[in-house]
Image 1: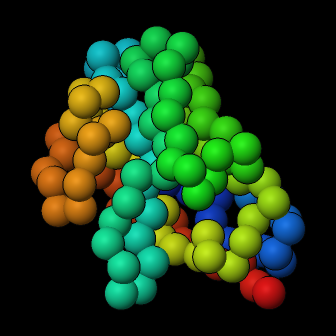
Image 2: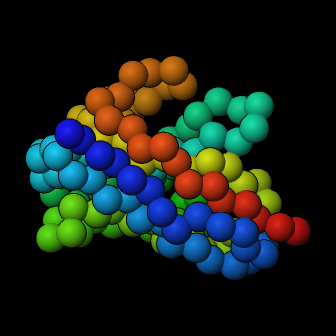
Length: 126
């Protein structure tokens, strides 16, 4: 049984930091691109960042470039996103997903991806 479990969300003041984790089991972690997505109330789900199966290739949305850093640890079947200089507009439910590079990198809201987690809430206070 495949499990994708996010953790690390919470409430933080603007300018603060959080690190989200996503641990997967039941699937070949090294074969999948992993991505972090977010969805704010009333908004579409959007790709925040993704990392290739090797960890050598990454992509960041313009809105988080320079503030967020994605990484993966094959020994722990886990990916992370370090979120610094957080802004109120970063407030959203953050989801982790696994699939191919193209499906994640070129994701459009409503697309079906192979595996999703249930999300972790991030709230950034002014």
